[in-house]
Length: 238
Image (cartoon, rainbow, N blue to C red; front, side):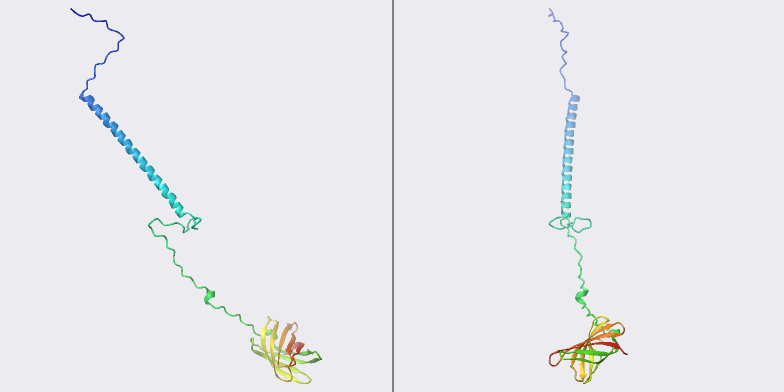
């Protein structure tokens, strides 16, 4: 006797037969697992490489910043950051630049004594024989007499000529020494009387005037301590 079968439900979901594993299917799962592991390992390697590259770039940037800080100008060190300056420091472990040794050159002024200025000699305009009448001013009287002065070439402190005073009571003769030269138109003579009743020493100042004329000014101190002053205008006679 057969058992009656229930009618088939047309909306029922078809049941798939149970999956039966096969050697081919197991091999595919292994390949997929190996591929995933390989991809994960490659990704990890790439990430590690990127991290290492980032660290290296960061280190290079820090070293460059440190190098620019060392070689640049510093307010405390006074080093110049301008191109061509010697303010850059050496790399660690390397000897720094050695400054060239400079031998100081002795100054010319410290080794060579300065030459003394040459003293001027007798100006040519005063050379020759001069003659005229002098007026001697005294506290008690005024005297007049003839003065003859002859000058030759010479240097300061040298005897350069002779002097003659022709007075009524006495003739006085002496020599003159060049004492100082004040340019081309003024000089000073020291007088030393060799004979006659005159003051032994005196000072004569000559000033050149136009027309071959000189102003003659004589100053001395008499034996009694009074001042003696003689003025004359002398003309060139030879």
